[in-house]
Image 1 (cartoon, rainbow, N blue to C red):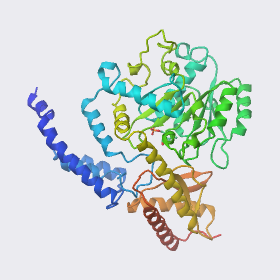
Image 2: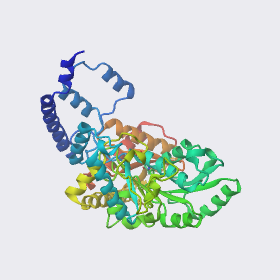
Image 3: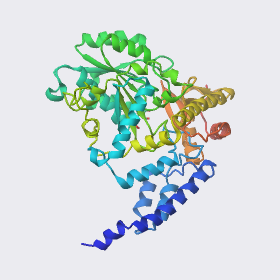
Image 4: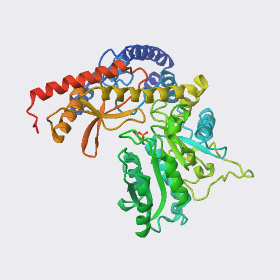
Length: 483
Ligand SMILES: Cc1ncc(COP(=O)(O)O)c(C=O)c1O
């Protein structure tokens, strides 16, 4: 047994030296990235990337290894990053992530994470009150919006379906209702739960890509006539592709009328509960039975950290058990501090320390500033798009997600689709900007999410100019069919 090797691996002085150097490296990266110097992505194909790491020198000096990882990763802190809905992690929380990494207090049981367990209680309590819940509400943190949505639907089924699915399995076909525009993880959660095709009732969306609540009653009746027991309805705040928020108040009223569990997937936009300006767009959220909010999207935190909040705290104890260990009656003792009884995970990261630290240092104002500014910038980008004759918006944005496309006279819809697809590929290949794309009802759109508070109007203008240049070059160089 090579104990000297283990001594080396655990050497505190090596950690100190490498850590100091790494923080310097990261701080220098942050300065450069924020000034938009260098590429946002130096794209390599998966095969080239795999080969690079296969052939990587053994025993590489750690700083070189770290630099190579950094160079070969997307630079989310570059203000020209306007792609997926992942936050540029705030540096303070990069440090709390380091703390979590080293301490590894998994918090499945209280002793394995005393501080973070207590923080988890306090932060989720604050989130519940901010949402408009009362003191009987409870929540916890879980690893991502996908898992939070699955857990919420498991809780819904446990609470709503009287046969006791946890113990006896399904005795009749069950179903949930969700907009056709919802994130795919809701569909996946329902399938994991054994609901199958027929158990996922896709409610059509309006021309604003929000759930068409006028279609709810007919869809519900049709499902009931087929013998399905609908137990939950899911609203998105907002949905992923377009960033549009379902009419939560109307869905809440429908859920109350039919005694359905109402879950809000607010993975992206739940942070707006802190926004003085945009909080009103979440009208109705306080009537939801459960709400999922990602910290690593619109709350500036490192991945993954998601809050799952329950209006009736007792329900948060019923997901993985038919009887709630604690029913929130004041005579019983609440076992809030043994987190794994309520979460899917056994061990999890010390997620709550990110939230608690931010609240401790900046109060709720930091959250308000972040989400409000980025939603404002979504509108700024949309205005710039509207001002340019060669671009059109899919629709006026409600959040920081904007879908738009390049248009040119004489090109039919197929040619425009392939032109816009090409633009996104060409842009990523150049690497200074990073944006994504989506298909809405057969039309190919470019899609930006303004995630970075350092992204300015000038960066946005340069993006549009670069897209115009790429489009003109492409149109000249190809024989795109003219109509
Ligand atoms: C509306 C919505 N729900 C859920 C998710 C999945 O969240 P996560 O990536 O944290 O699992 C996303 C991710 O983009 C989302 O936009």
